Amino acid sequence: MLVVMQAHATEEQVREVCRRIESYGFKAHPIPGAVRTAIGITGNNGAVDIGTLESLPGVAECIPVSKPYKLVSREAKEEDSVIRVPAPAGDVLIGGQAIVLVAGPCAIESEAQAMAIAEPIAKAGVHLFRGGAYKPRTSPYSFQGMGEPALKILAKVRERFGLGIVTEALDHESLDLVEHYADVIQIGARNMQNFSLLKRAGRSRKPVLLKRGMSATLDEFLMAAEYILSEGNYNVILCERGVRTFADHSRNTLDLTIIPAVKKRSHLPILVDPSHGTGVRHKVLPLSRAAIAVGADGLLIEVHHQPDKALSDGAQSILPEEFLQLIEEIRPIAGIVHRSVN
Ligand code: PEP
Ligand code: MN
Image (cartoon, rainbow, N blue to C red):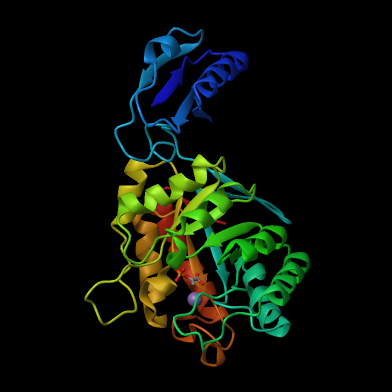
């Protein structure tokens, strides 16, 4: 259920409606829009007393939400959400007119490695740096990430180059640390339906980058985002990273058809990760071009200065100079879809 306020409703009227909703034992989520505020109601299993709510001052109408997700839906908020990431060199806006690039290695391997990769990325005018401190690996014998020492290296990258930091939390324990060091908390594909972790991320004040599970439907993906919003964190950025199919020419099948589908159903921004989405270096550039053409709000790209020596995902990592070429190749495509790059 959504309570739609009148365009001229006062803040006090919005607060009063929220108080009333909460007095019924439900949770109220005011969602300010460009023209009017909507208030999402969650925690209600049965019907809400529409009559009483509709009679409150400032209320335009109460509308039932037709989708299982409420707060992430376009019904709750018509215009696109622009997620503000406060980074050292200024706020990065995700979901606005400008395409946002997030680049860096799969994993932080050493301070020298992180600095060697961050320097050309920062010089290219990119504002967000990615790099895993905690790695969800298929094999327990594979490199698991350096843990907190990697977060400390990321903090140095942040300080030296002014880059905002995006890094993955695997569990509650690592989320506490990631929340402390990073600017964006990444929840990976394998954790997309780790509901207790989603709820914990929802209680954080930091933006969350939520990657699509490798076999998740669109509804499951949006419901995972709903978990985070329902706990009060509205700063969620979605990320398509490929799904499992019968195709054996690539690690995953990058599902670019989900971009217009998400845009139709949700106000949240969505990035595309063609690195995990293909698993193959030479496919990263063409799929990046396609992602921008189809309406993605940005890209998440794995970059490594020595991909052949990388401790994880070297096969899909591109060189810094290839990344610079990628930026130049997506620029004219962004222009065609009325977006800009830097
Ligand atoms: C990553 O981005 O480093 C990662 C592990 O991705 P995913 O969760 O999409 O596999
Ligand atoms: Mn990786």
